[in-house]
Image (cartoon, rainbow, N blue to C red; front, top):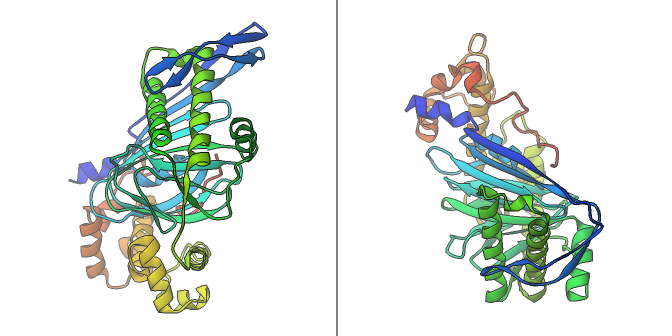
Length: 383
């Protein structure tokens, strides 16, 4: 078991490649686009002397912190909310304007997500039969997409292992392409907004996203062909805009904005106190909400009460600290008490139940088995 747990903190396989493409003609007429059945015919023009290389990165993670750090267009910080060994796959495909991501997570998780100010993402389930992912306190179910506002933040949680997909454009690119496709600009709203597109539009979006992942993982070299790159990117953008234009807005519950404000203040309190324990009374005072209100909001957005969330947060802080400590100079007692745990016997039992090893075993991990040094609560730079 210990050997298995030690392997948890490695990125076991990472593949990243750039596909250089150059074309010397000034204009091409390309007769392909990606449709539901594969390649089909259309006609568009292409000006310029080359195509920006496609960036493809495929990762497998056993370390949840490295996984969060690698996700693009957002800062993600959270933890697994259930016991077990964490595993995740992340595929990233960057076209000229469009970024695609797809993720698979082996454990239920709760996370706080802050969207990059430079991107407008849509987020949806990778397949139509996937279980719901709660985004900003609203269940993102099959056939629904979330339009996420640049610079906004929300809590996200899963109740089961999950597979998700996302696409993002810059705000300017979304406005320009939507204006060209549907005749009016589509802009992100202040808070997360959910849409239910028509069945045909949603099916096309999921199928194209799946096809892009298949082509990216393959060895056929299709993404070395300029006409394929432009056709696939154009079709994906068209499908994204069509879903947003045809989708019916899913209205949030009454009091949703109030809940969002409370939860954002709750996260601010946590962010402003990264190195000390927090207790419910002081959190309620800082948030400016009663215990009843905070409990109801946390249950809605996190699937647990604030005490459980704060306890899990402290447990994961303790684990990160143990894994980063020098066993030659640190002790379990010194590391754990710094996180506000003083009943060491009870802590050890709970720690082993949650992480599958004792605090001492975590501390004894050799330096090459621990994650690269990084402020465990610092948000990475936006990619």
